[in-house]
Image 1 (cartoon, rainbow, N blue to C red):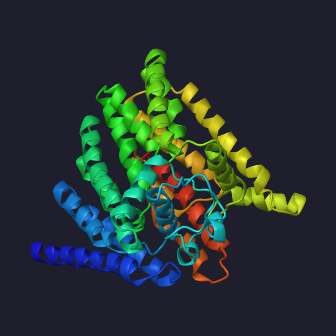
Image 2 (cartoon, rainbow, N blue to C red; image 1 turned 180 degrees about the vertical axis):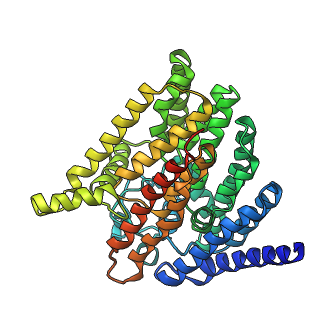
Length: 437
């Protein structure tokens, strides 16, 4: 019986390696059906491996690291964001401020710069927008391009190495937090072996991996009462992605008013220092103009917004995103502030739970939800007993259907399946009593 079990176990492991290999090295994002088929297979194996290695934590971690090493050397094939990373990096290396001009500005004859050519420009998905990538990422882009000035592939691999190291760090900190909060270490499999996390972070070079590391580090340092170091980690998280700003209200009650002043002051000072090398009169206008456009123009794989948009078409006859997008984000901000103000349980462990709630609110009201956004939610899932975010991590790759046609369109039936399954499974969990601590 043990022999048969071991054979099956190795078959699952080898199948996983083959699945990650084909997704990252052989497929592109427009090959929807084979892509989804392999992802579903990887998620089935993900569930089976968790059952096989219930208590073998080191084996789970080792396998998670090996999967990430396998995808590390693949060029990101499910996202074209990497080309903007290289574009910004090349600007940084030659001393140009990446926040100052749109890419289209450099294509004019009088503004041409070596390395910023039509070939790279044609692969950008944001050539008419100012960059939205904060300073930490700009430093990473610059170092990657400095090492390989004329090689996009090698620059991309250097960027992915930063993410790979951050992911290893996240796994290590998760284990420390599990020990701190007396959570069974076996739940490291939730993050370490999750196919969406492996594919979208180390695989496709999305820097949510770096942000997750800094957020987990923030919470761990806070649990250890290292307040200033926690503030430093939070500043790093904010300067990687702006998303962690929404978590700041939950810290006030946990720190107290006096300590909050010191904590937030430290964040403000360090964040200002990170932005200082890029400071220019128009920078913040340009930066926030792109963020404003994010809420007013871009839409992809949304949930509540698509319902509101449909109602807008019925009432007005046109897409009301320019009005509704910012309004929905403001509503989320007020709800988060209300939850933080009314919060009764203010432990460090409950902080991660409240951060999960904030993410769910934000994602629920957002106009655009890419698959890699959900990886942060997966990282926090082990700290409460809800598991429906893992169902979302399985279903959100359905959004890749939009890229399977040259004229680009979303299948709203697939989006409906994605977003109906989440509350159904959450209700099932509630009925089973899994929500109880």
